[in-house]
Structures are given as C-alpha cells and as structure tokens.
Length: 215
Image (cartoon, rainbow, N blue to C red):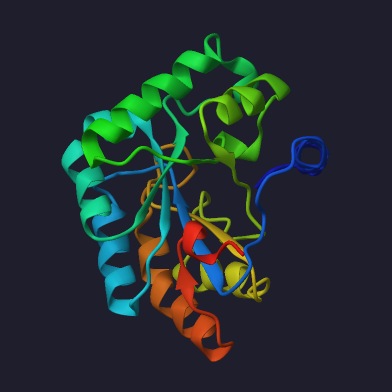
C-alpha cells in the first residue's frame, strides 16, 4: 500500500495535472498491467458472465509478450487504453516520448485499436509526460475507487475496498496481472468481479468502459 507521503504527493500531482477521475453515469471498471495469462482470461470470463465491459490499460511489454491475448481483449468488446511500455515511474523514464510512441505502436499492432486514454504507472504523470500524452491525443485518466489488489488480498477483501466507494460516476481501478505488484497471482481479482458486479447492480449502477460512461 502506498505510504502516506506517497499518497499525499500523488494527490498533489493530481491537482496540478488534472485527469478523468469520475464519469457521468454508471460506474467504470478498469484494469491495469496486462495482458497476462495469469489472470486476464479469467477476468474476461468473469466480465462476460456479469454482462459487463471494461477498459484495459495495457502495458506495451506485456502486449509484446502476449499479443494474442491483447487481441482477445479487443475482440471480446472491451476498451483498449494505454498504460505504458515499460512499467516504471515517469520521473525515471529516460525517453518518455519514446515510451508512449512504442506503446501506441505495440498495442495498435496487436489489437487493431489506437488507444485514446492513458493512465500512468502508479497514477503519476510528470508535467512533461502529461504534455507528451496530450500531444499524442491521449486523454489522462486516474480513478476514484480501487481494490488495493496489487497486494496479496482475498477476493472478499478486494470487494470490500471497491464497494466502500461504489457510487454513481466512480472509476474503479483493478489489475489483471501480478507482475508489477506484490502478489503471486491476480486471480483473486477475477474472483472478486461477480460480487463487485452484484453490488453495482444492487445500487443501480451499470458497469462499463470509460468512454461509454463519460458524460
């Protein structure tokens, strides 16, 4: 879990570099860090069972490793968005424009879709990378609820974290890969999806991708 100081710095950056944190209607469900054979197929099946579509913020190096899986995400009707090529803090990038360009090419080649949304690793742009993304036609996106599922949590705990903030307009952050977190598998996230979907339905919220819900 981010430290208090890290969270404080993140929110300071969000104020300086604004992005979509909420949507106009329903609830948007999003996944970072994939595609990954560990959990992306299970996440896709859980979303299908729930009748929900999502936004997948893909990592270029993951797409290069699993292009067929990236293609399947698009073929199953989900929104394709850009996370990064290398999953590192933006202030550590030696060629930030190159990272965006490489990710765009890689994702489009695998999925047939050119992303129009970007969420940075760890939710933190720099002023330079924020502007580079804008110049590339990428709308910046953050979140307003999360499952804290980069940690080793049981599905019910992930559900608890999401549903405490589940209200109209929320953007939910989840992860379909364990590669950049602190857990051995992201399958608990897939297992949490049915209960998240049920909670959303109880509150009259349709789960969908960001572009369908922005108002």
